[in-house]
Image (cartoon, rainbow, N blue to C red; front, side):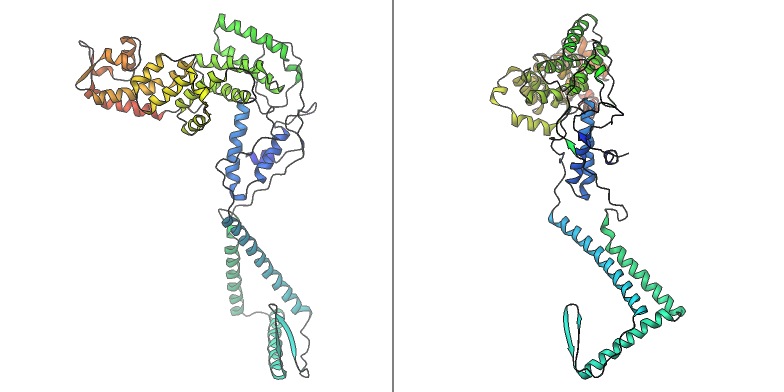
Length: 485
């Protein structure tokens, strides 16, 4: 089932107003209204692109558990990659409409003419009249006595021929001619209507009705007193009896911090934090406590290499920081720069760099992230490894996600530049390992240890170059799309 068919079942309700009883809908009514506005804003040729954009927006909202919290009534339409219909397309639509009208008009005129011939024979011509005036294509023609007789005679003969066709049986030859004429006429009509859809036989999608909606969300307070609650994805409107209020959530956060310090069970902690985030979202709680929950969860996710969960937190934090809610926006802005380097998302990186202020650039964490970007752009692996070993805050955890990829690029450059061999100790320093043992294990994992002389501990660079090149190509083909922004 497509997104269009799901949203066509919309009824009228608010964007964030949950039903108090009965069987609640899976989708907020304001979301259905939002989808209706989206499809109403584009032409038929753009509906496919709009549907793809809507899928991305709604999938993101579901994954971040903010489907019921987003104010769909004021959200901007997802018009990325959708071009406005130009004059050429408008003209094409007009031509298609005119073609339909012409075909319908021909059919109607033919029917009326035949019926008229059957029921009303032409009036007898009057040869005594001095002139006859008739209209054809909005132009008037006048004839005198002699010309009138000739015109009336021709009209009478044509009328008689129509009567003969209707009342007398057709011969085989006449029937074949008429059949061929009808087939040719049908072909012409099909050619005129061929532009009704892109493929020539697709039906026009049914427009999505836009229901009435209420812009005022209903805010409720949870009544659950449980400190711990397993995370379950919402499939209907939340029940206040299973949602924890703010003062209980504060106690839950204190409990989870203690459990993380003592047990270090990431699967459990992540599940509990997602449950907390869900309770905050459905109650529309957006304050410093909300920011604190997302920041702590993001840091724990980074520590455990869970970039997907980190990115969900980062996305919500950006929205909360935009509301000027207190937190650590500079710290997480530096993390975002490093994350974009990991995903190699150049377009978002360029947008971010344009928005950076001088005050932000002066911060140590952001300055470090920008230096990492510069080193990667210049392929300066020497500086990059130094920056990796001196990353502030938790930036090193994000760099862990792409440092091995950059090590392969560095090894390819080293094997190409050095002849005939290079010491293992040199490699340890240049590609950012803290010991020769860890460096050797890395080389062994990627089939480069076979080129190391065991007695002198030197890498035969020329022999190792093809393998190093292949490792680099393989590493750069693997792009993490799990948590892309």
